[in-house]
Image 1 (tube, helix red, strand yellow):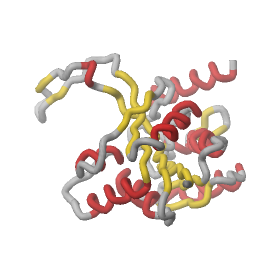
Image 2 (image 1 turned 135 degrees about the vertical axis):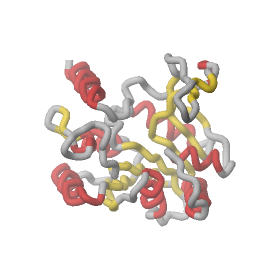
Image 3 (image 1 turned 90 degrees about the vertical axis):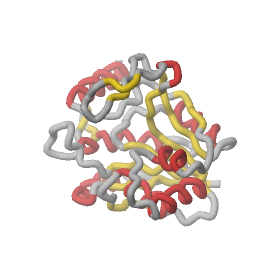
Length: 231
């Protein structure tokens, strides 16, 4: 049974205000994408890596992969216009009859070996696995006019991270359903599993450092994380 990591690097990074998509921003002379690839490249249980890139930066992505001589990166694919489409492109490129798939956001450069270990262990038992952490903040549900609609109990809420991990057949089926359901768009792959009631989703404990770099302030946090690693 092979383990695939699909790294989604097709975003435009419009919210961060950079000249290039944030996955190509350099933290200490290394792009965010490189940090994300390397944790899977160096993990002993990951067999193959598929990178789904922003189509306008496919040459830059290829240059990064070749410069580092990543042995496990077997495919570099142009992504779609949404995360869901990019995930589908990555998942559908796997031709194995059976496999396990870990789908990770390229802009989460600090995912730990422990999280990946826990995901792989959970995939021995479950067909769908998500990484999440508890929420220290109260989460509000608001209506279309920006008024509070409800305040869910915080103990029942968690903050989602990646990788999201699946039996290959399960996530392929989810995307097949989604392709025939044009009025629905999920923000992540577990959303597809829930939407089409394909299976239960087991939660693996994440890490506060496994941040998704989205806003300029996240770059400062990322620099601080790297400083602490060095020291």
